Image 1 (cartoon, rainbow, N blue to C red):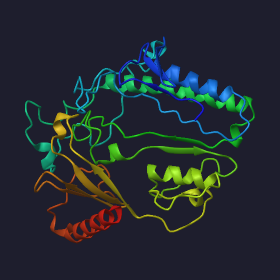
Image 2: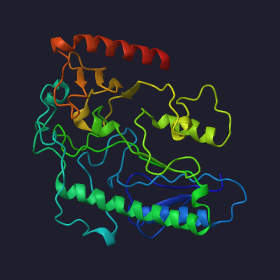
Image 3: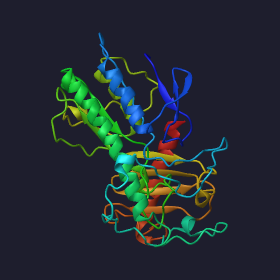
Length: 332
């Protein structure tokens, strides 16, 4: 590792306290720009051997403090702070919504529970338009930073010789099922993330694959591309053959797990183990009895009809329960 840079906590978007190689210092400016500037500076250095640059932006996290027990200083949506130059971006622009936005979570007992003083989920509990705009503004600073990095690589004639991987952690809810900040649930809006790669030597421009690739596949893929040996105990698998356009046997299901915590009050006791295939998703809640969910994603992509008690779906339910057990056994 040549050097590393990190920021303290989830807050401090403006004039943050930055940890540079173990030394804390206040740096003036907007944290996304600061991270991008450090990345650009690294890319401008003379590199005599292959390098790996990992940039993990804070955007679009809110500006708040997370306590040692995982709870938040502000359990609401928090403050989303864009760069000063982007504060008026997308002003009054309409925000598009998915068909399940603003809809009460019918058939979802776990979401219908009465918890403390929280209002029932519905049209008034989703994310408001201005908060969505603020997140889009924050992402714009990320876009600009990536553009600067690509420009440096282009000017040094290394752009087409560099593998670029772009992804994120989890997705946000923008009112789907009435949800807002509860971004750790097993619904599609949360578990699906972007994975975009650029490497002209290997990847054909504008190509796309529909296989179920997971974030645990990234590390073995990078090792594979670099010609290194992939450790036998490493989770995930290399998707290098897919990048080459090959047709190979691939996974037809994957596991999503979450353990209940104190971050989001509405997710009290909502730890789950979920299995998803191309067509079906089965959500098994660990701490809640009789509240499991089953969705036919082919005919119900927005997960609006829970088929857990549907007589015609019992064969699919049994198969998904078996698939979940199989995957859990494999992980052990």
